Amino acid sequence: LPMMASIASRKIVTVPLLLVVPERVLSSAMGPTSYRVGCASWLDTSLLAEGSFYPAPNMTADARLRWYARFFEAVEVNATYYALPAYDTSRAWVERTPPGFQFAVKAYALMTGHHPKAQALVKELRTLLPREASVNARGEVERKHFPPEALDLCFGWFRDALAPLAQAGKLGYVLFQLAPWIGYSAKALEYLGSLPERLPGWTLAVEFRNPSWIPRRTAEVLEFLRDQRLSYVAVDCPWQPLIATATTDSAVMRLHGRNVEGWRAQTRGQHPSVAEKYDYLYRPEELTALSETARRLEEEAATVHITFNNNNRDYPVRNGLQFRRLLGQSPPDLEASTAEFLGAQRPSARARRSRR
Image 1 (cartoon, rainbow, N blue to C red):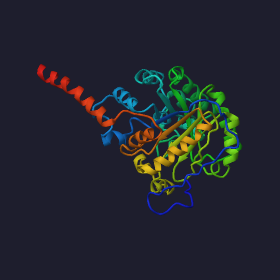
Image 2: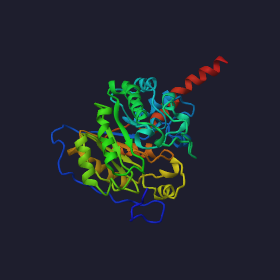
Image 3: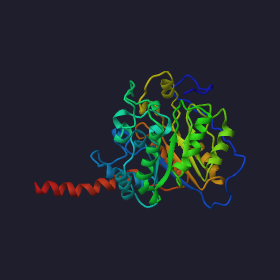
Image 4: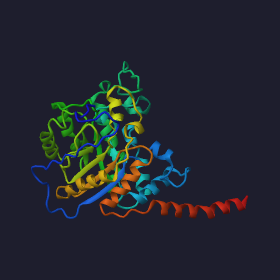
């Protein structure tokens, strides 16, 4: 990933925000804008290890999702990038979250130009591979080995597996985070243009990580997304300007943090961990500026999705709750909720000890 020329040599810098006002406003009479703030995962390894958000270390996945949904109205599902989702899992997510809660679901690796992990391939995909298909040093099957039918299978799988979320109104959008080597081309445009037909009726959001899209062809790319009814993902990160605009009535902002050294390590061919790449806690003044940027989208979008992807320790949770308050929302107090939870557990613990 190319770095912006203005990046300093220190680990963390502040990247100036760039606000682009679109040539045409999508709607001026959509009613009040809804803001959905969430984190890029509720089961991030670093978040669980840090131990300050969830009140008990032995909570089940069910209990963790229910706890998370007390404080946020949305979450991003990262696991679907590594493996195709399951219908029963989607149905369980619906049951474990309150009305109005929404999931943003990452598209599978093969659907975004990446190389899928060999060990996570479903049998149906394995049968489509030629015998000479090999696994690279990272345990991935190169995407060039997969025939076109493999993509068709993935999209059909997504439609079926995420149906419970869509039917319950809990599917916020499907995120197509394109691989950094996917540059602007007629073939890439054709593929993106096919997405609404492949997943009809769903909100589909596209995040670009190759500079041939953003910032080199910003106006052209945004107009293309509008024409194809695809939502542009505005990113706050070291390698790309934050362009605050909407191409559908659903605006998406993903906040990756501003850890320059983590991303520079990746461009050097290293393989930093998620925590190493996204190690950044937004300062209050930075969150204030970002909230003002989000507010400017009210004239363009009916819904603004904001996802904190600064995944190290409890940083996304802390920043996400701060951001909700900056938007005038009132999430529960974490400390008070934790004390209440622990207080409710103590009588049960005493009862178990008395039965021994």
